[in-house]
Length: 335
Image (cartoon, rainbow, N blue to C red; front, top):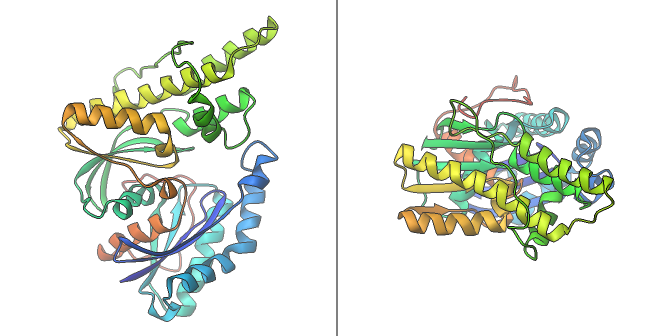
């Protein structure tokens, strides 16, 4: 079964063709990073405009590279939530028009479900049930994946996401967008024990996160140093901050694994590319006798192959959208 996936939730215009949910035949991504770097972050209006300009070409390229004609496609999957509403609308409306004209079923895919599905591509043997940590620029969730389309959130951030905490702290340190990626590189040469940052707790919710205080602590530290005309060692600061965020994530994830008796642990989302997160989880899972799954680096960020992969399982479940499908900026992953 061939699924054409379309992804436009933020600043990547992507299309892909995936066979039977696991075999990637094409995966085309048009990135806007260099343009948004000028502004220090994603400008929603610019993102949606660029999606509109290139989406047709990107989809055509995905079909061409796959060697599968549109007439051979069994269904069209598209990210409908969550994300930047203007960006989502471009992908959803294009997919609706294409599905209608080609007389193909339209499959609505939740963006975070797509990130989880990136592991189905990287690990052919992976099947639910498992426990998943989804960490990205806008999301930090611990999710019990009971089946391909049955998921339950058991922990989530109460404010900022891990990726946002990385990006904003990195910007304060003078790093260019995307800051989290730059910080990860610079931190490799720093002393992670040079500075100590808090690990916030959420009362009554041991699996929930709160990154706002952690982010504020590093910003306050830099402001105080600036007022005293002191120069802080950026590699050490980056390494210490990265350690705090990663340990915060891994402590919660391993606690969740213990509470749910999960033996298969999965990581997904843009932050799953973080070097320290991957290293630490590998050690922790080996020590506890659990199996760790992380996506290949090329599937950590936003892409359409993951959307097509999840779309395959949504299609098998009968999750077909009507032409009334609309984009949604916020949407629970379990719905």
